[in-house]
Length: 174
Image (spheres, rainbow, N blue to C red):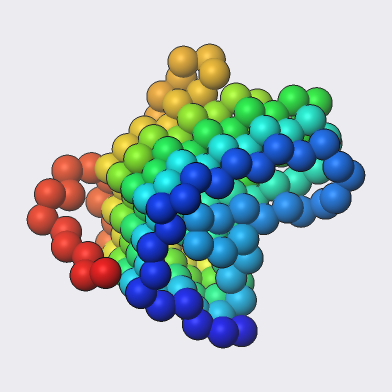
């Protein structure tokens, strides 16, 4: 329930799991956010490699958001390689969003191999969650060479004022 402000991550995050733990959260700034993350950025690559049939939430800023994320950007490639029906929910900013992501930018690709839900900003946006004034400049690439560009693959919440590409005049002060 705290606040993370004005921070930057430039260290690579690698997570290799073969344990039976459930609901693992991985993020460039926080694994799970229950407070506020303001004016932060992730500039390091995130890599997930898993062999167990459990759930993972992966985001450039936060894997699981139950709080508020404002004015953050992800400039890291997110890669996930899973087997055995492991499910990962992956987003350029947030994997699983249950609250608000506002004024966020994702500028790096998401590469997935396995059973995933993936979105350029949020992988899954649960009701009554909101994605507001956010931008995705990149594609999501699957192991089957499928390429798609979206804000959120699964959304039950609100998505407003979104741009998918060509955001050349968006400035973040970090």
